[in-house]
Image (cartoon, rainbow, N blue to C red):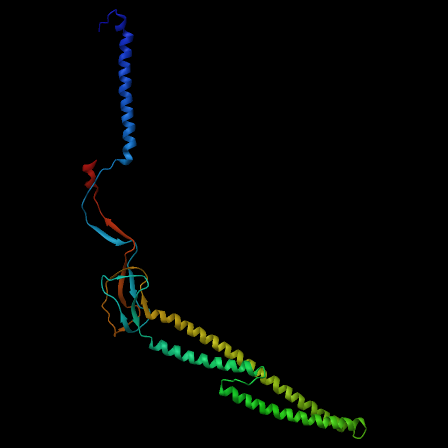
Length: 281
């Protein structure tokens, strides 16, 4: 390379000019790379491929069956039927359950009447008694009590009279003590009758209260068990694999009826081979 002696075309000027061009090219490349990196999040490449897929729920199918056996009285089921959570699908007769319920209710009502009467008589009241048994018991008790009250009154008369005679020295002490004993004995007999009868009634009341509690627990169990005679949808979904049961036939416990496929959350499952994407990279 021949350089002139012209100061404008000196070696230093030549190097400076070429250095400026190289720096400009470098800056352009750097800026281009930075712009490309910045645009990566918004750059979209459409990739399409065809393959078989399955649309299914995120949860497994729920089986529909009965936990009790009995005659079917109601059916509202068919394949591909959309059901909502809480819908009644099948109803089973509750004849035996209703019989048990009625029997226990009658027994509970009778016991409640007896407890009502016992609460009254233990307080010495006999008005408004509901049961004939308690009315008869109260009558028998009243007769015995009146007899003893009469004896107490008679013994008191004799005691008061003989006490005056004894105080005046007309009768002997032994004779007075005999009438005093009779008076004390009849009073104790009356008190014993009242206490023992009240104790019997109180014990009977406690026993009946325990029986009533047991009956109420039984009725509560029957109420809970009655829910098993209605098959209710546990979730929103679509009926599949319906067995075709109808009203009238007998349904066994655990007998499969249908399945429910949930429709609230669906996913698509597809298998795509890696070589489908080779043409894009």
